[in-house]
Image (cartoon, rainbow, N blue to C red; front, side, top):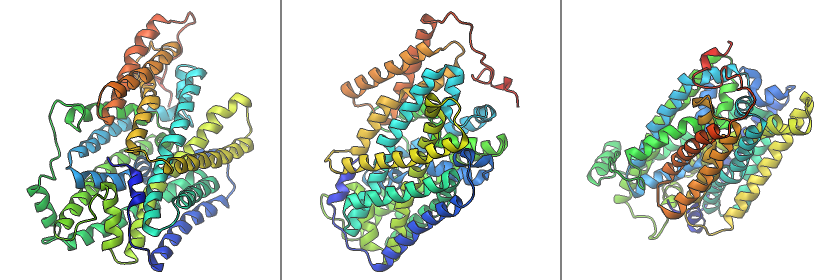
Length: 508
């Protein structure tokens, strides 16, 4: 896809005071939620898991909001505008994988009564594997996903308003970190619910205006899409460089273990009241992804149909800039502010979840290395400090990326995630699917996945979706034989509740 930095060179009309007022009100509501929830006495348990009393439907919406970012809001419509719907195959693949998690793994993992997924790795393999997983997760969140998710809407906001892009990055990062630091997990959860409503309200408004500008309305958009071949959604071609069914089959397998290894997502599972609520949380998050994907892809087709009958965007404009261009040049003032607020909301939900999960990892997985039994007050202070540090580091990284002229920035980050983080799902797969995998073998598998993915990226043009699956296969394919060769003399661990074959042996 085109580089996000292309947005910075696009020229749009200025905001009106009504639009600024709406944006300020949106940001103020998020800060108010964080401040209000901080007024109550907090414990580390409340900061990390909301005292395990959160509503399942709110946790499910937050699960979806955490998995969905500004990438979906901006890049998916750009993709369907420029090509077709073949990439939508990722939605059912990921939804099915998430449902597998809900009904096969969630109950047993929750019965372990853990705060982070890396505590599972400690029980399964030992402290060294736990530390490896936690370190990779924090680095990838802060310097990969968070920085790019923060950068994309900041570039759009800077182009739309004329503000300095670095000021937009600091504003977005500062507000998100502030309410996450003040209110902890519960503030993140309820702002996710609010942002969910803002995102889909904004998209629905924009879509209605597009339909009003196309003869025949929504039916006319569909007819144009069919006539121009913009609705092709399935490719059975035996090709791993394009979004084909085979690529998405690999994505589905990887997603199971990727989501199990993602603390941002699993934290919602650990925060629910019981197993039934946890399963419903994950199932709702999975099911919300299907209609939302259809909606975002339809926006791209609607943009294509709209500009078939209206003066097209300036020649040479990047596809990622088409939707922002429509927002400011075709929508009335007031609606512009609402839709841009939805762009920010699509980023802030994922950002706040990631920064809170990074703080949880630091206070739960790293702090005991320096202080064996830290008190609750110390854990809470460390978590709040880690929230600020992680947010500042991601903001600084986003500002650095904004200064670069890197083509396909998001593609580069996807490659980095596959390179360094692709082995993490493989580590969880070895832990959950096998009884004989051990720490030395897992370490070998993780290293092999890095080397194998680097070779794949250097010598092939395999689709980024498939690179993560390849990393999973390499990790498992080398880690398991290495475990058999590098057996330890000590007796095997008690595996009750730690593998797929022993999950039912967990005491409820």
